[in-house]
Image (tube, rainbow, N blue to C red; front, side, top):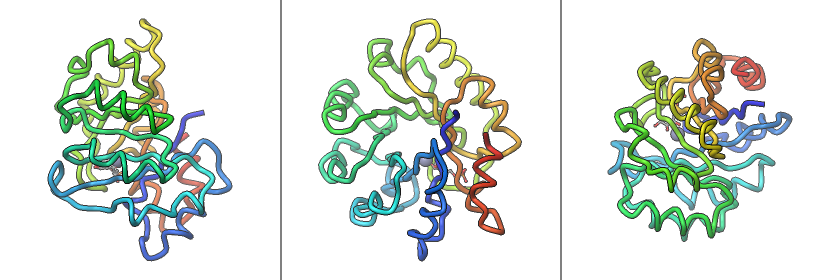
Length: 216
Ligand code: DX5
Ligand code: ZN
């Protein structure tokens, strides 16, 4: 089943616990955490002090998407938080190989994210085979509620083709502007994991189950 990853960036922060508990009856959900530092992206969100107890109110895997410079600085503060997947931006790192090796010591799943203008060819094959996830950004990172960039679809198709040809294990995650009008095409071309913020949390009746199901 396609994993749906609600991005809590669009949740009601004054009621975060009850917002998150709304997903507890569902399966194949990851909770997507957008960590922004105000440098790699022009926005600032939340860090480990805010997220520390999140794992106590959910059964779902925590998926941390670091839109930060120097992602290596976040390993220590986040390694005690029960984070399942740690994704860093390829563009924000210098020593990718060393960083991936270090992350693998502390997190069950390690992902790399690519901005819309970054081609998949930047990741060498010897690193592709080590990755658990590749996040294809379909908006320029930094904000929820932006429009989907259709030009990124080719990248998803190419990653899926490469995965099949070479037997790579990485999940293909898509993040940015995902909704019920593009989800079926995304799944058809190989997306395994769909992040959605404003589409899910924007439901006026707060029926998040309905929104998650409509994405599948
Ligand atoms: C954007 C974030 C996304 C964001 C998605 O930089 O990485 O995870 O929350 O929000 P929507 O689904 O509203 O585009
Ligand atoms: Zn994200």
